[in-house]
Amino acid sequence: MTRRTVHLPVAAQDSLDDVVGIGERAERLGYDRVWFPETWGRDAVTTLAALADRTDTIGVGTSIVNTYSRSAALLGQTAATLQEHSGGRFRLGLGPSGPAVIEGWHGEDFGNPLKRTREYVEVVRQVLSGDQVDYDGDVVQTRGFRLRQGAPEPAPEIDVTGMGPKAVELAGRFADGWHALMFTQAGFEERYADLQRGADLGDRDVEDVQTTFVLPCCALDDGERARDLARQHLAFYVGGMGTFYRDALARQGYEDAAETIHGAWQDGDQERAVAAVSDDLLDALAAAGTPEQVRERVADFAAVEGIDAIAVSFPRAADRAVIDETLAVVAPE
Image 1 (cartoon, rainbow, N blue to C red):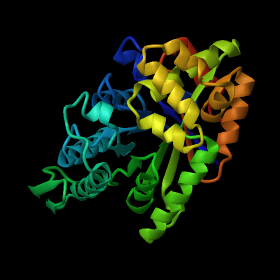
Image 2 (image 1 turned 60 degrees about the horizontal axis):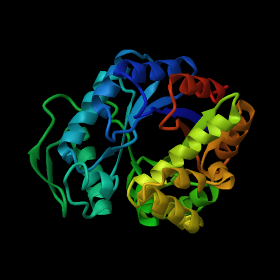
Image 3 (image 1 turned 135 degrees about the horizontal axis):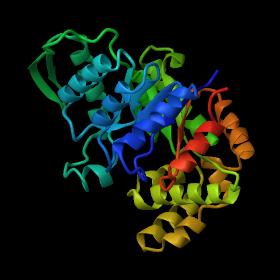
Image 4 (image 1 turned 90 degrees about the vertical axis):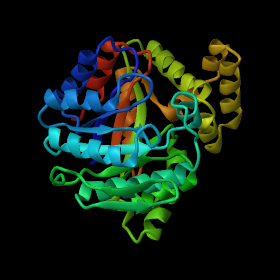
């Protein structure tokens, strides 16, 4: 059965207590895991530590932390500490993010993202083993590093995100899981073939690579309001977050829409960008509308072969009432 997880919001929450409260409610509703992304809001490490303090059984994880603003050794330390602090409930999701974040916000050169991701996975695994790390990669060099405390038991698993063919192949070859974001069903199925190829190259079974599908959801009795919130959310990511999501959408057969949304947003015409997210495109990428419509759409995605977990995410403008209603509507049965 496809697991149900939660992708906590990074925007529109007044306090850390509000964010953690959503995770607490997710635990009460029976969700399997809570993920927290790290973008321009609260940092993931502090947030997940607070969440682990106030929950008992629900898994916690990063989806994602980038591989540029922290060293690989530090990410290994962080993963070990959060695994200890959560009592073995932590899962590390990492990835390169994109140029708009890495170069624009962190001032780092967005070079060799795939090689960097692979080397980070390898170094973090070595750190988590408790052995001394002497690693001489093309991107990462670490000498004489070893955890001072005992190695976490079990070591937290490591997921990576990826949207392009080679990035997803890398996940299948080296990671414990893949986080799929901004995909249609057909787009996911195409990339899942890349995951399979990567698993074959790594002499692994693709079923051992956990696939988490991040699905924007918004369920309200006022179905049109829910759809408007989701439409705004998608337009922001395609139009406002560099070219990363635009290009991914174009690869999935929506090149005209992707170019229109991105162009309008960059021109400052957000209204036109939002209007360019058609009903068909909205339904291809999200589950938004009345509770009945959303349950049906989530079930459609959950039935797709290869998806192990649905990560319910929320429109960036959703307030706590919208989030709470949506959480309840799509909670595990």
